Length: 273
Image 1: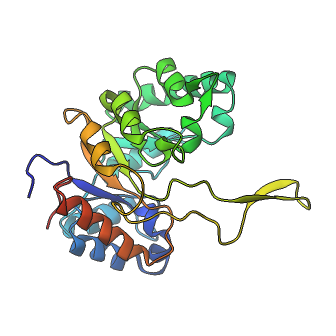
Image 2: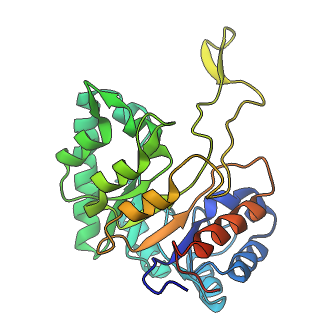
């Protein structure tokens, strides 16, 4: 085992379908694989206290959380829940509209700063999670870079697949650029292909072509430079590597197990097995 490698967690959004059927069984399976931590995205009939106890009884910890999502709405209630979970790092993030224009990014940064300040007073760290649209360019600049300059105290949970923006960016370079502000890295892999879309005249919207979802792949079997990504992090800042697979054409539990095996087998992360 590489004793200098960062511990490995799993974003439970990956297993939302399975969790909806039998969440305790999902948690037991993840513990059996060897994951050190979990990052919840919903509690599936557990209370936050019950969830924490169940996870800890399995020998894991809650590394960070997406539940409740950090926003200005009901933030005081959310802070109470974070306390019950025993977490210090809580995630927030935004949709496409909040990053559509420079004015939108400015407003988003102002809101983010307010959330950060309220959480900091409660001893909590806000980490902003990105999607691909924050890593599109606006007037020649990465939107996330503009956002980062506007709220310099805010930290990130950098999603390394979406930071690549379907191959438009080099993911390892993006990690390096934001390394000093990324205590969490989302590790995911895939073909770096945009889903095929078509225009639906009935609804006047663009839709994804059925069967053309560009599904993600187990970590290490796609086109994202996983070794380069992890090598580009700042080991003094990054605390956890969090596997996330938004979708899969194969069994999701098999997918996250293979992701674990790749990261542990290559000495890129530290697990319980």
